[in-house]
Amino acid sequence: MELVVCCDANTCTCCTCGINVRGDNNYYNEKESMTLDQYQIEAMKLRLPTADREYALLNLAAEAGEVVGKAAKHRRDGGDVDEYNTFIKKELGDVMWQVAAVAKDHGFTLSEVCQHNLDKLWGRKDKGTLQGSGDLR
Image 1: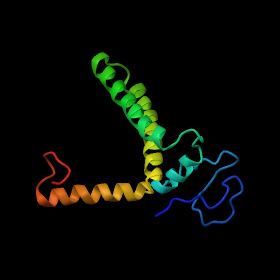
Image 2: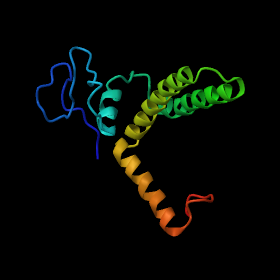
Image 3: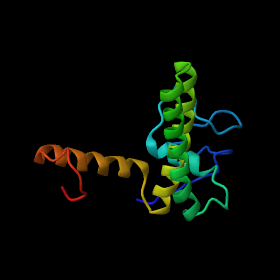
């Protein structure tokens, strides 16, 4: 399934793109649910021309590293849990942006990636191979 933005969200009135924009900012209303694919469409509208395929793939590791680094420091030093959780949410959002970009670059929607992952995990559970290692279990 190809990910296509069918219209300019600044002037969208077509009702076919699934984008529910608010005001001039093109943000979703925080009280409404967003699908993974809607997130991917919106996130890719913010992609810079220099954020190419290689950048997205390499920076995915960098953003995940920020999450892990903050978790390690919080474990070592402790600190305010609410502040830590706020930072983790922000950094997980950055990871999601990178995942959305990498998925798009490979021709996948986020919902396809997530469904494939769940199918794989449920298959492993059914075969009793959820624990262990190796891609072909």
